[in-house]
Amino acid sequence: MKIGISALKFNLEDALNICKKNKKITHIEMGLDNLEDIETLKEYKEDINNLNLTLSIHLPMELNTCEDIKYIRNSWIDFICKMDDILSSNFDIKYYNAHLGYIMTSRLDKNRQKYLNNTVEFLNDKKLNQKLNDKFLSIENTYSKKGDFSNVGNSADDFNYIFNKIENNNVYFCYDTGHDLINPSNYDKLYNKTRIIHFSDNDGLEDLHLGYKKGILDSQVFKKIQKINPDYLILEMNFNDIENTLKYF
Image (tube, rainbow, N blue to C red; front, top):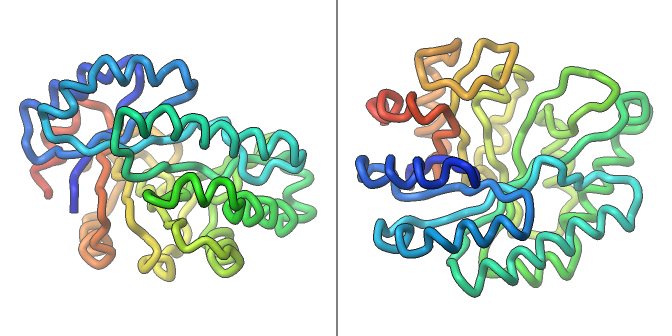
């Protein structure tokens, strides 16, 4: 299991400094919102290589795999493919991680299956699968507070449905402990599909990205981690909490 931390464009240098100080950390999951942001990542290529860090990409929060307008949904596929074209000439990207997306709550309540089928179609896309055939795509559980728009993927049922329908064997599950605290669901049946864990704590109400022991996360989570034995454990938390949280791994 590789232990990693999450980073964004504005705090990548700080993330690399943490990696320099703590050799337990061997991976960075980088959030990229725009193709232009790759230029920032390139500036740190030498540092990433010198630290022997592996790299993955967290795709934009705006990405919507269940989007009902097919043209827009396909534009996200084009975005991922273009991003991979640029990145692959400079980095060895291990995986891409994504949230499923969001739909107007009133529409989602009436026909959730319709939007899950949009996600299945997205994940089965031939161009996307050919582009990412040397890496994998992970889909992450999230939470929803039932406003005008609701996130899809806040229940194990959503993922069980998707994994039973998709033909692409290169799609896996990312279990987010913090999101599960806000919208609890039984993800046990997805253990065999889980290759990534996003680890953080919170108060059960807000996605605070706290370190362990600063929220309500139960110690039973370590039994889950041991059972899952993920390829990547990403500490998706405030940088000031990383050192103390690492003591538990």
